[in-house]
Image (tube, rainbow, N blue to C red):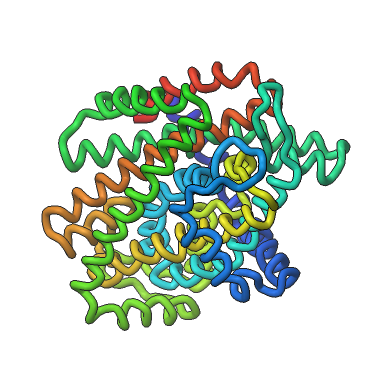
Length: 409
């Protein structure tokens, strides 16, 4: 049994090295670079307009005169619910712990170009969306691969759907449930199985109602959880304001120079900083992953580009804002060389800045971030399965989804 587990770990290590290796990261970021040049760097030239059409219209309840299942903001909230997850708390900390402060710079680079990758994904999702057998809008990579590239590419759309439906059970379900269970057990002593059962019941009450119920919940959870976590991080950063210049100095200096080991920090090369930063940036904002377009495809909008601007805002909010706040909290608190990594490092930084409530803020943040991710990825996985098996399988997928939450916890 031990030998089998070791074999699985070895195979996973090989695949992981390929997926998050230099070639794939260059391809992912390179796509964003290509779109940036083709659009004359829309994310810069039209940034003000993008914010005007998104951030400043969040509370605009007027309906756009176009068919659709959910509002543009609900589509954004559903997508953000998936992207703003444990990666914003644990992922950033891991990047810094393994790649050094310079990883934050490369995370910014991936986000800058990722804005255009996400923009393109969302535009294509709206342009090539279609109605399913139940009369609801469906879309995403599997649809624009077939309709945009031709029927000869249906095999690729099928593979995307298969991997998407299966991957959802891992990154979107069990990993998230385990993160919540660990956080609640560490902070409040709640048994893992109790957290799993409660999570499954709460998720079931939402997921079994389909996309509209998921969107109704995420549009309320996402703003609250983002603001709650951001306020905690901002307070700590303000308390450590004197260390801000030093933190930015670490980020820019170590983005291009190797860092020797200090304390519990093992040291990192420039390549390590680049790889960790880009990988965590891509993993956090999901630009190029193909998941968010599935939610955006159901939005009410009068033009694909208008919804595409929400994709630009999505990456900006996730990585440039929230991930940066996490990074600055860790760097200004001085705990990044402590030897711990993941959520434990972020918790240590919050406890250092706000002894007592700091760890609770992180625990609650993980709870909301992971729970909202559970909801959105249930929809993503369902739509991927639907492309292969039809809309009649949707309810079956939702039922399979719930017990795995308990298992993951």
